[in-house]
Length: 330
Ligand code: COI
Image 1 (tube, rainbow, N blue to C red):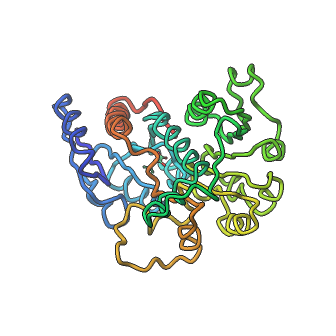
Image 2: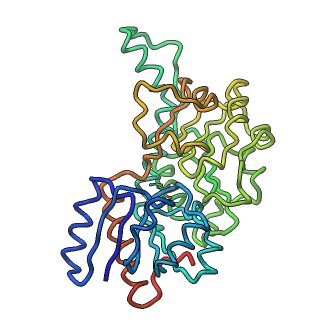
């Protein structure tokens, strides 16, 4: 059996090696190339592939995979929004993801970013660097005083709720699917409007779907409390970036921690040192002291990387051998 893993980084290689050693019946080949129209031919002769990317996997790529007789596709990430799943399904391709490689990794990161916003860390760093050791006027806020509105109560949202409660913050949540335990605890509000009105912090843990594109738009920001804090480590498309800029300008939004950005693909995880970034919206947000932009790194821990590789290969082998797997998206 042969599996080709696309988009492999050096920090993933040890985990591929360990998995390969435990599965001598499989040959796992690794390529740093992501799956696209140029690299898809490399899958010829393979039984399955593993991928890690938010770059699109469109209908044409799935068609090419089927021509090469590859019908087992295992993503090493949670989000499946970049894949043309309708086409894949029609072609009889099976696709898996890794929905729980480390919900804590993402939850911990979002809370730490919020703490940095609340404590004016960026502002103090700049002042301290310039040997300005005065306190005023950058008085901070406390997390225990916040009401955190959690949008999306899947594994990551629930992990975040646990941490926020540990800090003594009040939590309200919104999701179309209710978690039974949270339901019993009375955490859910009935509408986004209610969540916006109740929250001093809003954190996004929803997947990207057609329905939630630009969920936080001008109208949504208008319904929020003045001085609200926004955290997004879900998908960039959940926020209308222009509307966020307007809300930051007016003070409606006090600050934002953005680990995702709607046009992140040409920027995040690229070395752009000494290069002009040709995206005025990104540049506007990036220049602000009260906006913490990070390049989609909330997931990036040793635990998560190991699980992404190992679970994805387990799933791919299962698809190859039995035609089914845990965590099948289609
Ligand atoms: C996901 O798992 O969906 C992520 O956003 C992580 C990233 C490596 C793309």
